[in-house]
Length: 569
Figure 1 (cartoon, rainbow, N blue to C red):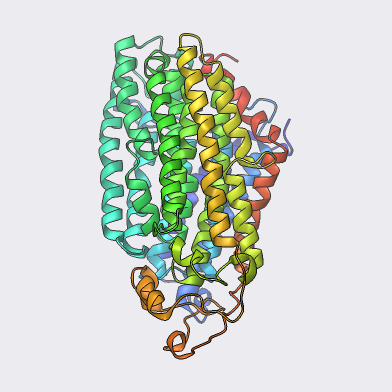
Figure 2 (cartoon, rainbow, N blue to C red; figure 1 turned 135 degrees about the vertical axis):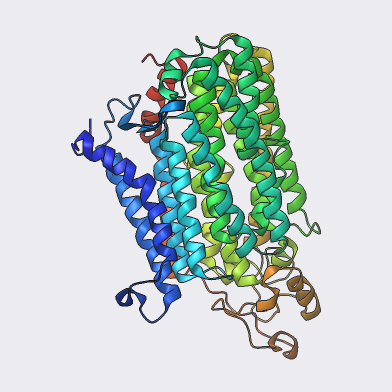
């Protein structure tokens, strides 16, 4: 069933447009704007260009989804197959099925919302021209990763996103941005070198890089030893990007230093590339190798769940000087642990849960990073002790709609039934209860119990964050914090040069904080129009996916069944 009957050639064009248009838009962003489009402000003109291009890509992706045959989501659709490098049998192969389509939609949506947000609130840093171009290159690489069907093209697209994200962190980030950017690029590049060796091994031993043909062969053309080596090599590269414990240490630093838009794209889109690779490449192409490493992958996954939760609890405690952005970053380590656990079960239930958790994490954590960025803009810091340490600092009293939305996102993140975060975690735990044939049931049931305990820890730290940041008595005749303390705290933040924020998000007049002995705590600016435009779709989809999970599972389940069955429906 298709909502609108669209011809195969138009579907092919739409998918090619979705992948290539952001790249062309990035080139156009660096060129001088035509006189009629410059307007009064050239910077605003290039930011408007970013909104236009990402909006066009989002519309094309939605049309692609509307024209998708939902009765056959396991079949590759909108396929393109063009010879590119005949000597290596490398072909430009594009196509989508029920696994990749939701990730394309998530990527197009989040990138458009980031462009829309940046139009009204450009990140502090160099020229917006370079910023818009980098975001568009990042979008093109991510969309290509989810759309290509050739292993070497997958690798090229996978690597394409690293350089733009490096510069987004290094040039538009906050404190310690250079160190964080270098750590990000070194970890991911080293992982990618090992991954390339595994991809070449598969291609040379099987005689093709065609991902569909390899998945249909289901490892029959590869010996068990080749599969084991390939899974180890490719898995390391994918695990770094996911990120899996103990290869995660680049993530908190990158998120803490990145601008708000960079954090949203990193958590909402880039982390999904690693888990997508596990599902699209390793599960169908090297099943024997995956079966060998599945218990170890599950063990690392549940350690990541517990480790991420304990790190968040440590950051959330009073006196820890924990950064709220860093806490959300560590929460991603735990949430992606559930995704890896679902993949490790090698069952339709577990893999469907992993794919659902992927989408839910992109929606919820993307919203959380938007909100934390807004809180940081208003208070001048993301330090939890500063946010929670003074009477009258509670968001419920000072910016009630912002506080309510932050609480909603936190509750969704802890997996409340009825919201998107619940279904992925529940299905992965069900998958661990009854893993695939050949895997140790007692071991996976132990992993299930540990993962279930991790959900309790997640609830604990998220509720602590809500209590400390959102709740508290709002006293209109008290200062946010003592003047000297606030100056010290602000000096440690990237926004120190801008000074404390006033109610409208701008800097207060110099000396205002220290000259009024009984200053009235200003009411913070609540959610602005541009913020509501960027955040409402994420909140709405979080509710929709929680109440109507069949929409997503109806797409992924037939494709997963076919993938695990070796290409047979």
